[in-house]
Length: 169
Image (cartoon, rainbow, N blue to C red; front, side, top):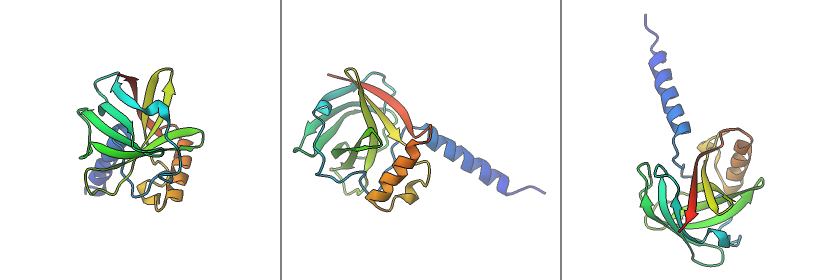
């Protein structure tokens, strides 16, 4: 007699591994910070070009919409770019000593936020996807819960992934 759970387990495992190893941000219904309260990081302003051609975002322009909000335009998409929109309102926030850029599409009706960890290494901008590894997307029921989930996930080794470097054009 065959175990019918075996193919389901195998398929689920393959999907989980694919999700953990691909660099696609997960949209959530809540922002990681409080939009309009944290001033922008002037260092982010400009046109950024990926160092390698395998990045999801090959070329982006980060402009200032106001003192608290960025206008981010994806000028050139990579092969694995998964989002429909290319224009975003974005904000920054800090959590557990790390900096994050969270964005919401401006050119469609989508009500999701996408989050990247960012840091500067010399003149390079480094961005990474943020994995929700403890409770997952289901644990994100508010901004506070989202921050708690990211904080808990940051304690795990694979929370930050899909590292890509950018240089200012």
